[in-house]
Length: 153
Image 1 (cartoon, rainbow, N blue to C red):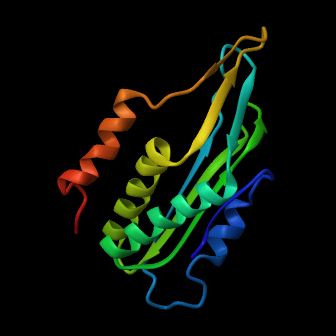
Image 2: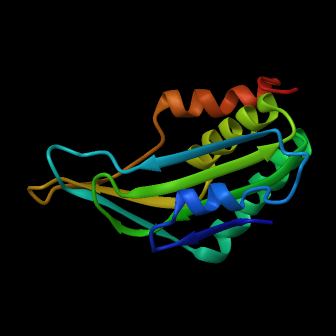
């Protein structure tokens, strides 16, 4: 199992190099890195969570992906704390024998992380205004497609 949270930045290239290392059955690697968007010319994002609950949920999502697709390796890293525009926030990396499984598993994991993982996100604007972020309707729709058999191999 390779799913965790951390306040520090991650090295996506190092994760990519290590993913499926030595496994000659890996024919595809899909890596997604999400970054903090610029909000009104600055500001940032604060992410709070309860580590035990969050990491347990992330591990459950990884387990679901491994049961749906034949994955050779998987890494999920989600940052927490105060983040600024262009900071890395999340990494999902999947190694599989074939590209379709890698693409679909990565999509599934990101859709579900975005809508289900117990993170509390507060966006802050440069002038000091702040608001809690909720899942957008299009994010919920993207996550729901996996319940309808979408993406199944």
